[in-house]
Structure formats: structure tokens, C-alpha cells
Image (cartoon, rainbow, N blue to C red):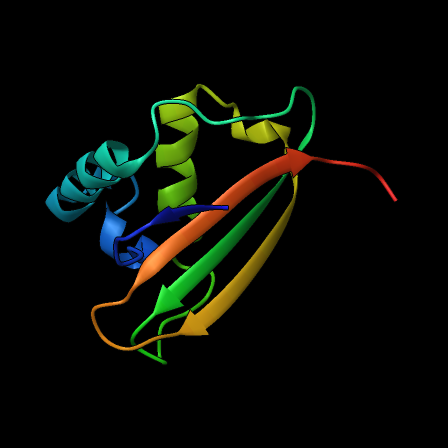
Length: 111
């Protein structure tokens, strides 16, 4: 599991209207890209992804940070996110200042 010590950004904070990235999103993308390892092991073919979001605010929605972080990760590693067929998402509550994101990719296997 890869850990990024950064507070998850809500999709509501990432976009202005329908098409424009906010300055906050642009800065977040820059910061996350710097935190990501240069290379990670990504299976060929269809993928399953696991995201663990650690929030210090209990009111944070579990689904809001998915799109921003997934777009940034996919851009960094050249992944077309249409390869992701399954996602496992978990929300955790932590002490303020311990916000972070953990993620990993695996090979998707149909049931």
C-alpha cells in the first residue's frame, strides 16, 4: 500500500463550474505528484484499485476525493482509468494533522 501524507481534496474543491480546475486543485495536483513514487507496480490488463482516505473531519464524504486523486495518479503513471473495473474505498477518522491517502492497484479478476 502506498501512503501519501496529504489531506484528501474534495471534488467540490477541485472544479469551478463544469470545466475549470481551481487554483487549489492545481496546487494539490502539483503537491501529490511530488509525493508519488517515481515508479509503482501496476498490473497489465484490467485493474482493481483500493483507496483508504484518512480524514480528520468526520463530516468528510468518502466519495468526494476519488476523482481528483485518481486523475492525478493515472496521469503520473500513464494509466487510462477505463482499465479500473473495481474500487475498494474505505474512510478512516484520524487526529487533525494525520490526514492522508493510501492506495494500491491490483489485477482485476471477474467473479
